Structures are given as structure tokens and as C-alpha cells.
Length: 277
Ligand code: AMP
Ligand code: MG
Image 1: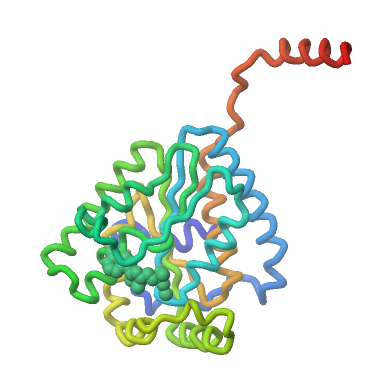
Image 2: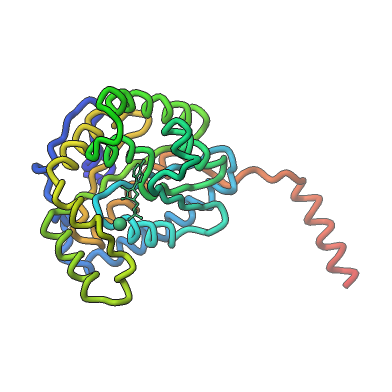
């Protein structure tokens, strides 16, 4: 089965994260055995992104959500690293600035949504407003519980304007998170990544799991589906996400745009110029 079907959260379903194996690696033994497939997907990803850019009529929005050390940065490095910087962009969602906080919660997402021809990755996203905001009770339930419907409408608006939306939840286990925290602690070059909140948020794992499960159940739609990606193995996560993005773009049947000039005439001019050289 293709990862696009296997990991997609069926609209209307209510997945239980405990039932999804974060260490899943399909038929692959290890990173080395997946290398060739990954390299092929990466190459194709670059070609397809170039077509989005050349075509200039549609755009792609990739939302990444995960708990701390879930692998968002690594995914961006891999997926975006495969693409041409021309036509791609990343936007990270932090604690809202005073200006952002003074607007409705979707304002800051809308302003960074991709323009036609662009592929944009959201590192965290408007979904923080039903995740961290819910877990920390930053707004009352009456407010955050209405946001699922608002998000679905917002995304529909983007889709109807030519944006293709893919949303990935990077699913890691509690053990894997602790292991990654340890690796950060053991590597002074990565100390800058450590924050106080890593451990306080970790202690809220059950609350986050509940918030993520509701998010998946209420906002995986036909127009903007969620994918739950087994992410304990970084190489498998990269492979699965690359494959899903490739399949999605492949299905659009894009071709390089038709020339805006008469190629036969341009060819004549070229030969005339070459003769005069
Ligand atoms: P990082 O992704 O590690 O740079 O951390 C960004 C922090 O910003 C995380 O702790 C997020 O939970 C937090 N954050 C992002 N969006 C919001 C939001 N809408 N309200 C409150 N905190 C947020
Ligand atoms: Mg962090």
C-alpha cells in the first residue's frame, strides 16, 4: 500500500495514537536499505517542486506538527533541502508576538500562506492554537473548541484558491523523545536547542496526546488531510513524507508551461545570430 493511503487519517475517523507504532519501518531493515528509494523520491520531489514554480498557478502548504524533538527541523532540512530555494519558504510559529496576539488566531497563518508557485512549510502552525493553547488553558474551552471548524473553513478557502495542503503529525514515542533529549545534552553543539519547557511539556504527554487526537479527528478533511507519520526512525520519516508529497504532486499531472514565444521564430533568430558571430 502506498504511504499516502496507509498514513492518511480518514476524514471522520478518530485515530488512537497508542494504536499506531512509531517505530514502523515497513519492509526496510535499516537506513542503508532505504537509501536508494529515498534518493529517488528526493530527486523527483525537486522536479515536481520546479514544476509548481514554473506552472505558477497553484501552491503547496505543508504543515508540520510534533512534540519537542519530534523531528520537525530534520524533516524540513531533508524535504526542503531537496528543493530549489527559488519558490520555497519556511515559516516557524513561535509564541505569538504582541502584534499577532492582537489579531484573530488565523491572521498570522494566512499572511504566511504560499503565493501561487510557492511551496511553503509551516514549522508548527495554526494548529498550536488547539494544542499548546488548549493544554495550557490559554483560552477557555468555549474558544478553542470552536477553532476546529474555523480552521477547516480557513483551509477550504486556501484550497479553493489553488493551494494543496498536506499536514503531517510526526509520531514519536516517549522513550524516543527522552533519547533525543539525551543526545542534545551530550552534544554541546546542540545545547542551543534545549529549552526549559522541554521537560515540563513532556510531563503533559497525556494532555498533548488527547489534544492531538482531537485535532486529527476534527480537522482531517478531504481537502486538507492529516498524515500520522511513524517518526522514531528519522530515515523512515523522511522516506514516508517524501513519498507522500511526491504522490500528491504527481497526481496533479503538471507539465512545464507552454512557451510564451514562437519557438520556430526564436530558433531562426538564434541561427541568424550564430551566423553573424
Ligand atoms: P520551538 O518550535 O521549539 O522554537 O518553540 C516554539 C514555542 O512556541 C513552542 O513552545 C510552542 O508551543 C510555542 N507556540 C507556538 N504557537 C503558539 C501559540 N499560538 N500560543 C502559545 N504558544 C505557541
Ligand atoms: Mg523546542
